[in-house]
Length: 149
Image (cartoon, rainbow, N blue to C red; front, side, top):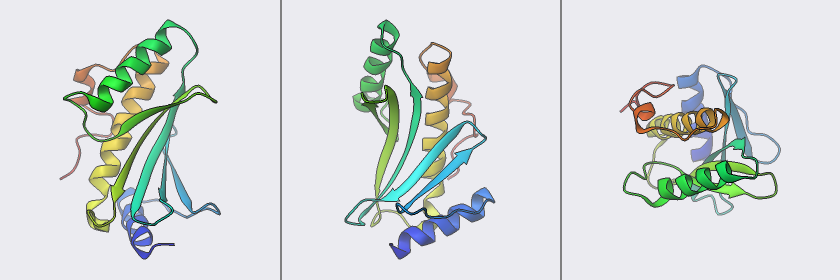
């Protein structure tokens, strides 16, 4: 396992105030406010840290089509931001993830990326579970607060 991954988890553990451990698959899953789970793991080449979250199942029908179209726009639109969406057909779930080059970020700089993805995941999950799309206003007052700098 990468020493840099260990350092990132150690720093994140300090910020979150909870113990973090790497499981037998080499990943670390973090349950936030009993609402979303973010998983962190290294890519096989250990050059990227992958952070992701299964958001929610989207049942077949018109609403799923609307959500997937909005997710595509969020991936490629002018307001892309941090994190990309993918759809897992086998489970019917929307997945949010980002790959962060380890050469780009130090352990102490990781929390803002984590924080941004957690906010985006929670906003999308909550909206979809209510049967609506996220509104831009939700990102002005995110559930975990503004992203620290």
